[in-house]
Image 1: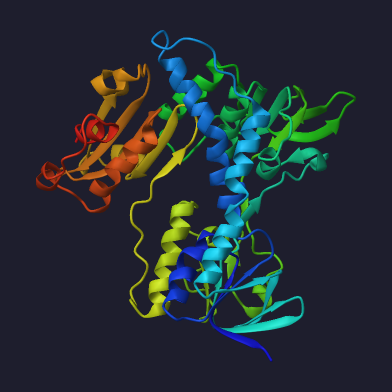
Image 2 (image 1 turned 30 degrees about the vertical axis):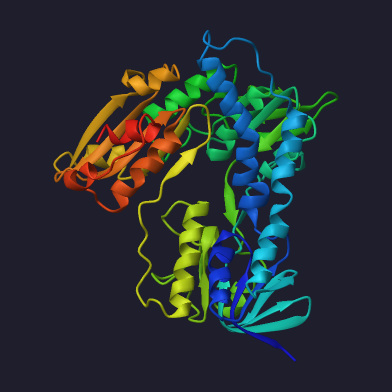
Length: 443
């Protein structure tokens, strides 16, 4: 007999479990199909693993900034750091799976494939549902070049038992710069190859330049306007042929050229679900071209940033939609984003570029981080932020490059999302002295 569900999810990441758990707790019959680790990319081979490896890097930077108040050398031990990361990460699939099953969700292990508008088949067994949610996420892009098999992805890096003496990273996005930061701090000689002349293209470029300059000062070789055309194995490592004609010799190669939606072999074509190379096409209710099938998380073709918080927001929205709490279209708030380099770079809301293009609508206020007395406590010697206000002096955007950029943007986020004006800001009495008080004091 075919098992029938009210809601059936394909994938078990944040696009699923943040909504599936409260749905099941409300008595909705929910099933979740997963071929890999419960929890998807973020907990197992993404955000959580990355920040575990980065934590000692951030501490190392902080201690160095406080010299000569604090003296002595700190050495990052790669093997111990990796073991610590594993100790933090490895329990998460069982923990998330336990939360799902304790809430009444049925976990179905295996690869699911749509066979009609209400059916998913797993290893020959059909499961039906009133509504299906595709939340299959992304996978690493791989350059289609000769020697492709010698390229590695972010999952490989997060499990490296021994850090290579020389590491080459191809790409200029989040993963490329974050892993360059971690590997450099752990003692690897890092070369970063950028296809164009910019990294982190969606961020304010003067701040990105500060990040790249910091990496360069620490010994990372940054090469711009260079495409890798082939990889060859040598007696001692690998050689990368490049578009400039200058080869790069290295011990290990990380292909960090992006991530691709997991839309292949899901039965989308057979069922009639529309999608593009950028992901599944949805309407303003996250509904696909097949009315009974929805999508959530990174697999969606969307303008919003592909981030864990975005997936959580979408999953929670679908929970309310399916439970009958709302019939409204999804209304995305301002979604912040951060790159965990040293220094961090973070932003939210209206961008500097947009504000500069519309000087009649926005006012920019620029602050130099070392000028703030509180930043001098930690001897921060570099960093800047830009606050963007509308004509009613509502904060509508912010971007910062500093060691504490993530905390600053989180502090400012409510003011942007809820459009606090001067009266509301006066009602905020932050803890003092803290980074939050310092950030709010700039408004």
